[in-house]
Image (spheres, helix red, strand yellow):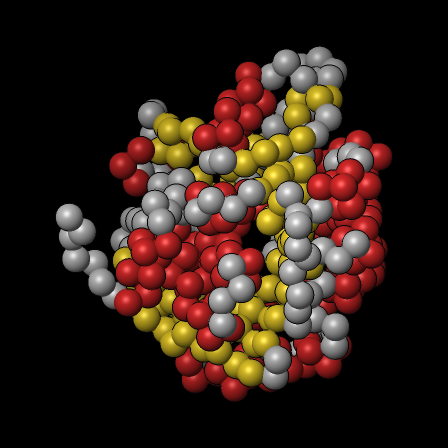
Length: 357
């Protein structure tokens, strides 16, 4: 797997930006009066590891013209060291387009988090390849990795085609393709055949394929362990077998990655991961982590994996840094990790929580 040299951007990702509103102090939504708001998307959660650690990152998205929420999102992306581009879509009146709202509490103890996605009129569903200069982005500027998400690929027929065109263009121009399957049943309902074909093509073009046991099975039909079944460590061979099955189905993929999680309580998880590259498994065994807010932990893992690959580290370090990046994300109230430096992440992997003066 070879990174393209002399590229303006280390990482580019298409996304639909929105905002998350969260009750303060870990309270549930229905009983709260005070909320915090943050700009969010799964794909920018991933890109934040690289952007905070100094690599050039760009977001391809779409905005509602003259919207204060769009202005809030743009300011947040600049604060996170991310370039962005995308069309300004007229709202079209009060029943027209808007940015999605994610309404979520963090849960506490044995009271699990609850998340409601309010995506009616979501402007990100209009993402279209004609709104972007692919020649400039992939040929003139150059990109080392483009990260695609199943959330965006399944958002609408337009976004499915958008992700397919990006994957095709990236493949032709030497850009590595990362694809996080991110299965959502509500997105797939009534579109199973259409999305199955789109996901199959994107996976066949990908260099890096990421998911959990449910994602691989439901998006790509790869046989694997049952979700929510017995102890994960007891089914490790089944996880490895699923990844080998995926490799047979998609022989051009170089790297497969799978997160492992058992929830003991909202604030205490067992967290592990598998990375498979060059016929070699690299496993981070399940370890207990303390969780402030679980949302974004998987995205942090992906972000750490892509950063490790972009830094051209030895493969055995990829799963270590990715595991620790995911664990770091769960210590933030934002959906994304904000590492001060690489050492902050490596200290988590080492289990060193001592004060640094």
